[in-house]
Image (cartoon, rainbow over all chains, first blue to last red; front, side):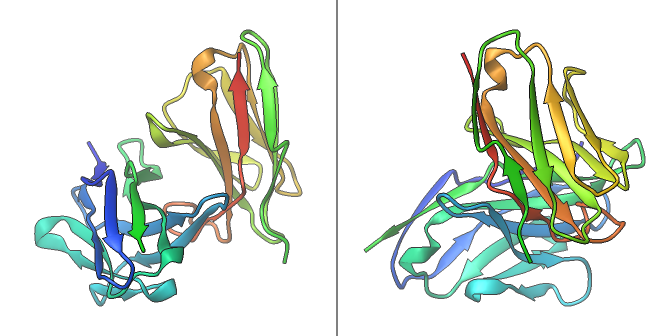
Length: 116
Length: 116
């Protein structure tokens, strides 16, 4: 069955340090891949998405993600985090289900805490 | 352009009652999806509508239902409320016929439902 795993429930990073949030998926074909962010008191917002082509995808707010087919991963990275990046990050996969419908399958989320 | 709006923002109900939540998508968006978000289960897909037709449905009991009107506004209804229905209910709209598994979704702030 299709699934998305974000192994880290919480991650604490110092301001200015680099960040990598992990996402692994289980899906037979090449999926559509997304990263969304949910900031405190705000709605979910799309950071970036991958459908095909260049496996390194640039998003908003200085984030990027790399699709690695061999590892079934789509990790999110940022070279230098800012206090405003403190939020919850969700990885999602658009997958074709057995009933021939596409559905977005979400990871459990990773809460990012920024140390001053 | 106005964002996705959801009403009401907060709701308190008792077990056995029913509730209707409303979502107005971004102007021009014809696809509306609903999600339930809880600390334990994360983001779970409820259903998706496009042009007044339910296109996808998640794995929720029949107590959860929805509809979409000709102006793309959507409502979801939960009958015979249970304590476990307490959650943040999120609505998202997207432009284009391919739906939420392909297009960027724009999320509303959610309706916080508490069942006592």
